[in-house]
Amino acid sequence: MSGRRNSEYTQFLPKRVEALILSASCSLTSEVISLCAENDIPIMMNDRFGMPVWRTEAVVGGSVPLLRRRQLLLAERPEGSELTQALLAQKLEARIVFLRNLASNRRDERGSKLKEAAEQIFEYKRQMEELPHKPIQELRPKFLGCEGSAGRIYFSALKDILPPEADFFGRARGSGSGAFNQMLNYGYGVLYQDMLRLCSQARLDPYIGVMHTDNYNRPTLVYDLVEPFRADVEACVSKLFTRRQIRTAEHFQTADTGPCLSGAGKRILLDTLYQKRKDTKKMSRLVTGLKNGLVQWAA
Image (cartoon, rainbow, N blue to C red; front, side, top):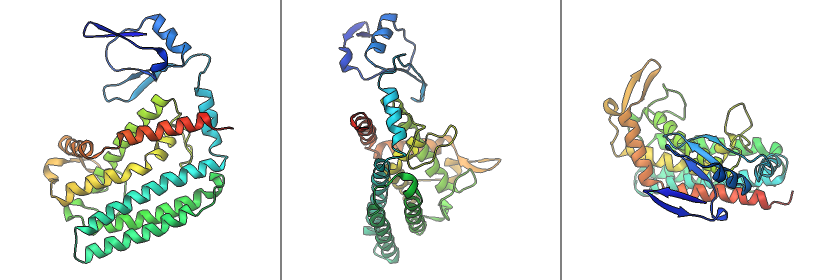
């Protein structure tokens, strides 16, 4: 298999190629397409934002049917609860570390409250880790109960350190939810895009999740797999507000439903996210590990 860049040809062995990802004007010969099909190499086209638009699959199916069957089995087998437990434990641990870091920089009552919140979240993490490995249908309410209670404690603690312009009184969605929530929602959306792209490249079905229940056109596996990385977004947004880098007049604009992020607001958030986030590789390793585990799993 060969490709040309700047009038130079480069050759690759098919077994060294995981995927062909197209993002600009290009052409492929029928021989290349056939070779990809024979070697179970997906061909993907991404839009200008890097999001998958379409993907080819060989008629023989390759690894895709196997992966989908194994994904579906996660909802029926204890391994699904084990995966959920690990993802949520990582999420809570990241939030605990963030709160403790915030507390270390505050010697007043706010620091004490942050430490107390971190200890309370640690207790919910401990309770969750002690749950037995049973099918996810039996444990989902307990997982969500621990995660939800820990989340309320976490955001209540963050509320006490944010300036008034954050307009934050608790976690909410929608355009009228306040400046801090607006930035969180946009940052989470960046995580969803990154994870959706990685799942598609790995040929995992992003619409077959474990913890999040299936619903029409909702990438539930994406929602499952981003959980450990939410604290990175929360840390970035908190930093922007506590360091007074957000100016409402510049970074937000008025819409019919209330204030929303302006172009400048999106840019400053994206710049901060990609300067701080080192976990794109971590996300890739998580997806690759899940795929390899499903392939090797003795059903």
